[in-house]
Image 1 (cartoon, helix red, strand yellow):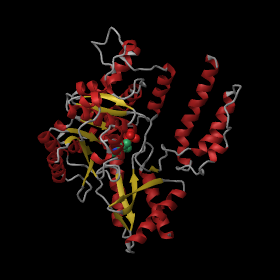
Image 2: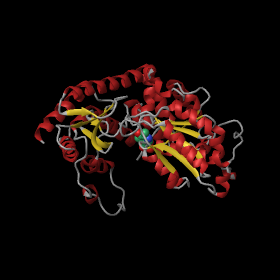
Image 3: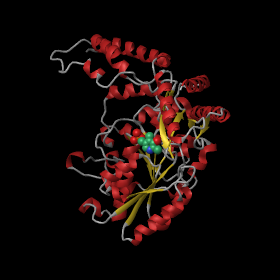
Image 4: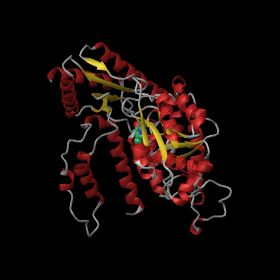
Length: 467
Ligand SMILES: *Cc1c(COP(=O)(O)O)cnc(C)c1O
């Protein structure tokens, strides 16, 4: 393809995306294809001869698109959002166009230095301690793995890096913590048996007393407590662990404190939500995902550490072929995480923060919080429905309850959720809280307005009459 053809298709593709933004609400939110259906429509072997882009683009629209679930749909209330924005998409185009691999400063100085700047912006926007330094990762799972690996080295005096884990190290997280903690503990060599799931209170927040009891018991047994993962905004119900009390326990016992705020972290840009960071001075590492609620398309996860030296010491490598003259004066982010090669993720974040401004981002997040309270008030008013967890942010956990026995309620709610999602106009997912089947209404899509939330509620009520 020459430049002129690229230009022609480029305009056409941008037109397609612009139309998609305008019309995404017309698609069924969740793809309706059956398992294997897309694969069946694709050739088993790669084409020997090149094909015209017109044909490939046509197949994209005819074969691929029906197999897509539309995360940018205004009726997206599933999981947590994974927002994009036009600004972010345009910046990604520039990133792809330059095709730079930004593993070290020298392989694109602007990528490293812009990353430093946007991470400092983000840190200050959220009100994290001024000394913290940040790096962009692909996902919160990776950032949590980095934290658990660094905690391993801090607890073993960097012996685990040398000799493997010889002495049992223990990680603590609440029963409601994200599965990425379990995954990280498995792959970081701690062993699954050394992850303690600490009980939660009636609001699904970790009980600090239980945490300290577990730490003391492990120490008595000759084990080494290495890391506590505190959740700010759990995935099931957006519960907040009491950070300050947990921080004090970590300080007393000299344990690494990692904070998982993957979804909720964005809300810390609001003065009225800053309470969540009470105790931030105890944090060793912190992750939140701009790709969830900060309108920056996947993937973009912000990881902050209090002491970057420990992070770098855990990950650093110095092969001859990567040495440069600038090494003593610059950051080489290759040593701030697992991967060597790095995408230029900071560019899209810079575009987003600059084009919306902090105030623009604040008002979008605030609107989602308002819509969640509105939805909650409707559920509260309706006798056959109940709210199942505190609505701290923009997630409402609720269920249908007409007073029938629990096992039947479980099935009824499951059936109701399937019926709601089958309409194609909204998509909600579920969780269980205290063993009860609960629907999650996660508001936070960029295109979601009050009318969409209202339509969703009307639909939920209508479907509830039919089950
Ligand atoms: C979404 C989520 C994660 C996982 O995020 P990834 O970026 O997909 O790895 C981790 N923790 C919490 C609390 C989450 O909500």
